[in-house]
Structure formats: C-alpha cells, structure tokens
Figure 1 (cartoon, rainbow, N blue to C red):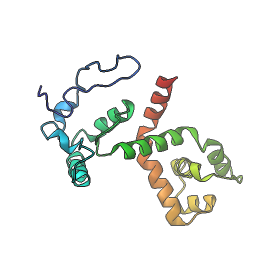
Figure 2: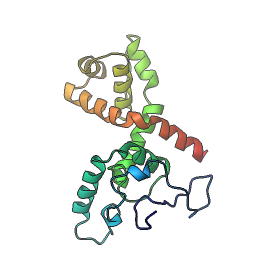
Figure 3: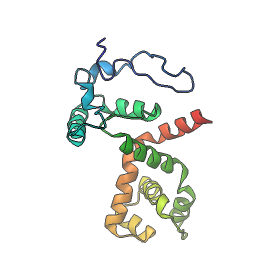
Length: 180
C-alpha cells in the first residue's frame, strides 16, 4: 500500500470509531483511477494559485473512474470535510446530500394529493421531491409542469435535481440515524 495514495487509508470519525483511527481501505480502492495520482490534485492547498484548474483536472480523473459511485457514497457517509471525492467538491457533496435528504422527507403529502387529483400547495423547497414522486408514478414532464404550475423548463430542472440526488437517498437516512 502506497503511503501517498489519496485513498490508501483514510482517517474518518464515524460514531463507531475513535477520531484519527486508521481503518482498512474499502474494497473499491484498488480500482480507483486516483490511486497513483498526486493527492494535491484532489486536495489542493487553499493558497494554490491554480486551485480551480486542479479541481477540474481532478474531476476529469473522477469522471473516468470505474469506482466513482462508491467513492462518492463513501464521502457522503463519512462526511469527508474536504477534497474532491467521486467527482464532487465539498460544497457539491453537501448540496447533493441536502437534496437526497429532502427527497426522503419532503413532498410526500403534496404528491399524494396531486396523484389523487386534489390540489396541493407545493413549497419551492419541495418541488424536486414532488416532481420526482410524480415522475415515479408515471407522469411525464409536461403533466408535472402543469400540476406544479411551472414552465416545462422549470419542471425539468426540478426533476433533474431530484434524479441526481435519488441514488443517495438511503445515505441521507442512514447518516441521520447515525447522528441520533
């Protein structure tokens, strides 16, 4: 195992482990495209003059990586506080996690009402969740736009937001249960 490897051994502090405890590497790490890439690419110093360019280069490595999804899932579950993991920055991972949690917690009553043909007031924050639930029930984007009183373009944006976050819904619930 190479000491300078970005993912060789990570320090994480979930509830079951002591702060700073070294854990065995996840099973997907040997296949990671970043394994032998300079870690500075994924963890650029704040004072680096080329932070944005390094971030784009790191994302290109991630986008070609065969284990991008488990890497991103691990970063979400472990609350990785910095760096690019699974092709997303800390801020992007946070936004994805928030949307995933909203998919689990918002919009169920509103979507149920709309599916039953009843009117519903849908708050902006719940739009992606409601759009996702309606699409999951077989509604097309045009019907979703009409039901949510949106333009087709706005409905498509909400649906795209929800579809991006949907694969990580279970992680949002698991992380909330860990905190409890």
